[in-house]
Amino acid sequence: MRPSSRLDRLPPYLFAELERKVSAKRAAGVDVISLGIGDPDTPTPAPVVEALAASAREPGTHRYPSNRGRPELREAFARFYERRFGVTLDPDAEIVPALGAKECVFNLNLAFLDPGDAALAADPGYPVYTGGPLLTGGEPVLMPLLPERGFAPDLEAVAPADLERARLMYLNYPNNPTGAVAPDGLFEQAVALAREHGLLVVHDASYTETTFEGYVAPSFLETPGAREVGVEVFSLSKGWNMTGWRTAALVGNAEAVEAYWKLKTNVDSGIFEAVQLAAVEALDAGPPMEMRDLYQRRRDLVCGALAEIGVEVTPPRGTIYVWAPVPEGHTSASYCELVLDESGVVLSPGGAYGPNGEGFFRISLTVSDERLSEAVERLRSSLGG
Ligand SMILES: Cc1ncc(COP(=O)(O)O)c(C=O)c1O
Image (tube, helix red, strand yellow):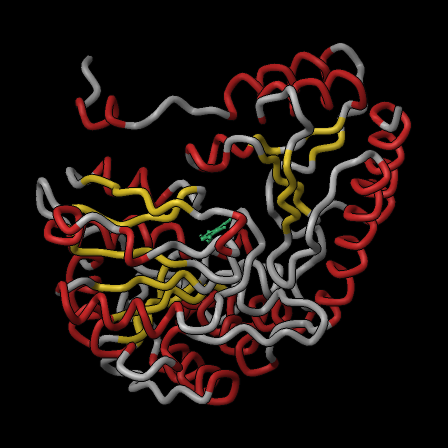
């Protein structure tokens, strides 16, 4: 047996060593608290679960779904975009449901990259923006996200040769892993660059519904001209505590939506229709707003504890993560290993999100208040001195 050479193009999996150590600790009886993965610990809103149960009892939902999505679901996405962002979308031409943002982002690479084409991807960033191009024969071109620029890419610094071969540009605000929100003017600049170079801008809106202190995250599609050059990936995973439901949509530029749909008809068979109908309930009810208070409280707990052990961070205004610099003398991997050894707490090493993530670590706020308080206590007592 010989796996394809495309798998060799993937970078080494930087979480592997950490995962091995976590397993060894657990086997040795250590009560490990993982602040690694961003997977909401709170249940999906009950009416959504009830809508699923009711729809699942209808045999009409049991057959192959249409992978254009049920009209009810596309219409519900359109209603949500109108109400939430003031963006009017045509449910027939500008919306296609996706099996989560991850599937959507990956398949956009297949739909838009030919061998040798490039995708502009944030560094640090969600790994599929780089893994996707590598697996589909394209090439990721990294756009550094630096603290001094508020973790926004410097679009003027992208090399002309890279712009020449770029077909896609990934943006993601509120941003994983840095927690940054989109600075004024970034989306406008992206539209101008995309027009000039024939790029498709893909804005990953996975965290627009998890924001704090009254900050309201915009849709990229609110930007004048965005729909001519861009699409947005909107997911129910984080905002509605629905990561396991695999429900999202690609919305925006009709030509891009059509190309993605054409590809998908050959790849998957859409979302279980009972899940689609439950998602209508979710979208119409809106995201559970109390999650914002919950994450904000947890964010403040974590930022306060980090300050006490000498790690200064700016509290993020969005996402479910705190992004913090590792103390002097450590790499992100060595610091995460030290914290695991000393306190049994798992952090994500920033280097796993790209070269410019080195020197940082990420804390996810998706464990119960009780476990998070325990983790914070352990950090204070084992690293405080
Ligand atoms: C930026 C970003 N995009 C996409 C995803 C995946 O979302 P989904 O569950 O909709 O596939 C994540 C998950 O962590 C993410 O951080």
